[in-house]
Structure formats: structure tokens, C-alpha cells
Image (cartoon, rainbow, N blue to C red; front, top):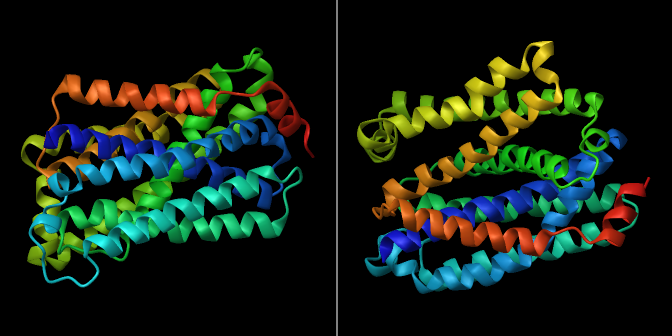
Length: 318
């Protein structure tokens, strides 16, 4: 049973992070005045509809929380980790970011106030979720850099997911992802791949050379033994491939960009898997992982499916 709950947590982190990261991407497009990305913004805005669903899914996750988080059944001497404060914090974080996303997406014309409010809400809410849902799996291990790393990982994957959905759900793929948009998107993905690698390296460097037993004990299982190949696969999908493919001019065309975006999004799922599974000690079977992921995918697609009138209004908004 713990394996099924582990797969549930992995997918909860992936799909909720992608939904919230997509809204953060839309807010960044607004605050920078990126009018070229109107079709991408329209897709990103749709993803906010999954966030209220995430609140319900979190309640479902609580049913199996004692199986996934060992500190619930066997409390440790960390003041932050108490079950009911944990539940209240996370529900408040999810509810607040869902409400902020709904408010931001409902405005026909974006304002600086709306974008700033959402970005701050996103940063605070997902910092709390990063600590509670991921970092607490390996308690008492802690890192002040980890929330920022997970925030960026969400946003990076969300940009890739928005690009894929925008291209494949459009009737006119060439119009949605034009050559110029593909080139601009390639630059964004390349930049985020470098920033993601910078944060990964910063986290690794501090833990490895600090050689603090509690921190190194968390890192070693992720880099050696049964998880080593997965860790290197994630590094290749999230950094090496985007860097090699998107750096040359020829890689900034539509097809290479979509291929890279596919690997970036899939790499984030694998990243969530690597962050959760070794610490949760519940390796799901292949079929369990596939079944839970497919269920989340169907739910996400159903909730965020385009509504013609709404999509047209967002696409034509200044």
C-alpha cells in the first residue's frame, strides 16, 4: 500500500507543481510585457483550474500520510513537524495559491498588482509545500535552498508543458508556435536549464563539501546504488539535452524545441520520483506508477481542457 501512496505523492507534486508553475509563467509574461507569447499565456491560464482539484487531492493524500511520512507515526524532536499544523499549513498554502490564481486569471487585462500578488503567493505557498511534502520525508534533514530549487523546477517544467500543450492542442500548430515564438521559447528553456543546473550544483556543493552527516545521508542514496542511473537521466533530460540542442541556431526551430520540452517535462516527473521514493521507502511497481500517472493525466486533461469562448477571449486580450 505504501507504494501506491508514494506514486500518488509523486504525481501530486508533478501535476500541482506544473499547474502552479504555469500560472507563474503567465504572470512573468505579463510583468515583462511579452505580447509575443499570447497563445502560450492562454494555455498557461487554463492550467489554474487544476489547483482547486489539488486541494481535494491533498485531502486524499492525508489518508495515506502516515504510511509515507515516518515522522507522523514516530514523532521526532522537530517543532515544525506536528501533524495538525502540517495539515493546516498545507491546506492554507494550496487554498491561497488556488484563490490567487483564480483571481489573477479572471482579470481580462493583466495588471502589475495582480501579477506581483500571484508571484509572491506562489513563492510563499510552494516554499511551505516544498518543506512539508518533500523535505520532511528525510527529516531531520533541512536546506534553506531547497524551496527555491523546487520552485524553479516547477516553473521550468511548466514552461515545457505549456509549450507542448499549446502546440499539440492547436488546430493550426504553425500559427501557434511560429518560428519566432519557437526561437524565443528555446532561449527561455535554455536559460532555465542553466538556472536549474546552477541551483542543483549549489545544493550539491554545500552538502557534499560541508560533509554534515544528516545532509550527506540524504544525498548519497540519490547519487549512488540503485538510483544513480535515474539521477544521471534526469541531469541529461533537464540540462545536458537542452544545453546541447538549444544552444545552436538550428536547435531553435519548432521540432527540436518540442522534443526538448518533452524531455524536460518527463524529466520533472522523474525528478519528483527521485525526491520522494528513496526517502519514502515505498518503490511503486511499474504498473502502479503507470496507473496512478494515467489517472492524474486524465484528470488534469479533463479539468484544463480548452473552453472555446474563454480561450478566444484570452488569446485576443492585449
